[in-house]
Image (cartoon, rainbow, N blue to C red; front, side, top):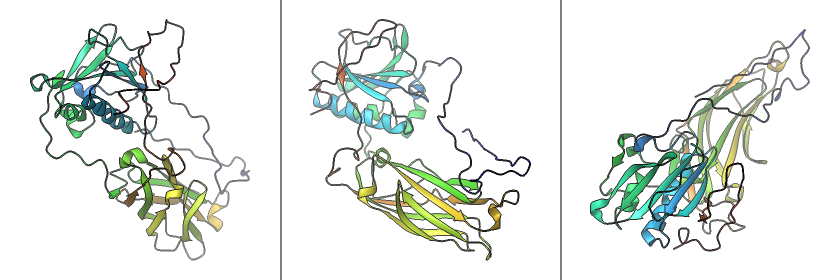
Length: 348
């Protein structure tokens, strides 16, 4: 984890006009990575920290089990990369069963094949000129189980180039009516500022594992208690919509139920919890920072949206899925393939 702390100091007692609001704004942030990416050597290391594209290979005429496995696999992998979901392409498995070499180390290739029970398993296989590919093999009942090892808690145990898992009698629950910020991968959030302290919570529907309708938070947290000479206002909003607001007091405790209506839910909804203060603590040179904290055990209750999106599909968890059999572009050139109108891997 990398923490970035910014401090604004007044020079010659000259303060900016917006000293008590958002005086510093970071724009066009870029993260650059240095070094040489290492190819995976065991199944547990197959998915890299940064993934640009996932290629899933299926037979020319995939079975229903192979198609279902590919859809579930791409959904779970893209949910793992919430900040920058990778592109997904579904391609036809070459006659020799080995995909062509990926053009860069931030691409991963998975070959899905339905086979007999004796040959089931997950294997990391070499690809000439590129990173290894992952081969998933299994029968009608076991193929999806082999795929789940890639993103389940069992993945850390797959410290070999070839592993095989038995039937999981109790499959993991992808969605629950009640969860917490910790379970959603958001965790507790803390910020310290002068005048206005804001905490942003990003609720990605992929983390819920289903299209979300109405949502309710039992918001729990704390903030710097304010003296009687100062006032404050706590506000919770979704985008430009204010959901609730109440006066801050000397208790410093947040315990409030917030309702997010279905009309405010998007594919990824940004909730903002803010504390605005008044009084002499905001004056230049005698500032008194306040801290705002939202607990990770905040309960989140949700209902299933049915239908998922009355005004379109922008609220439903989804991934792009296309099939390409075109040859690889020559070095220095770029080729954009139009999505196929019929993709056996994306429909049953």
